[in-house]
Amino acid sequence: MFVINCKNYEEISGEKIIKFVNTAEKISKKFKIKIAICPPQHLIGVVANSSIPILAQHIDDSKVGSTTGFVIPELLKKSRVNGSLINHSEHRISSKEISKLVSKLKELKMTSIVCVKDVAEARKYAKLNPDYVAIEPPELIGSGKAVSTERPELITKAANAVKSANNNTKLLCGAGIVSGQDVSKAVELGSKGILVASGIIKAKNWDKIISEFAKALV
Image (cartoon, rainbow, N blue to C red; front, side, top):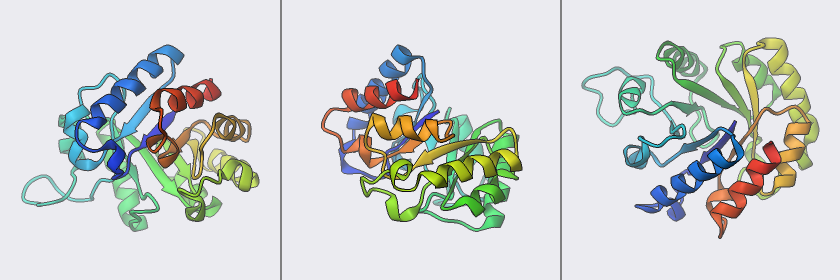
């Protein structure tokens, strides 16, 4: 699983998101690899009909109806969105909300990716049976220093923790991944995929960098 979080980077604004998703679609087909994109929330509808999975960057534990400004999973599903990140380090929520949202996405047959900062959280949230747990030490996010090289033991320990807590949940590795070498190392250490953002979005050549990462995964 290769997840690209676009955050709210200017490089992806307006119609640029269409070009970006088209590039990812092409590479997904070429390498026969699953690439999912998390566009800025307001641009989800622009690319929701894509042939690759589109995920929300955040969802709210709120009901359908008069809940202004909240992102509701039931309505995302009707807009052909495939799932969501939950508890990203830039948008942390409570344990209670995480539990409810994982359960809600499961009920809706949507993909859940719970972001965690350490091994203890990886073990704790794997017990909720999300599809993926993504480990990202906050201090390495956007740093250009990959967790796979800076703290390799963290991935190994997290992979073991997730496996012992729940055999169905898979581990993704994030934070500071900027090269195919970082990707290969993460997989070697036990990760089943990657969650990346600035390393791809801010690259001058999207085709080249996404291809490099995809090749490293396969």
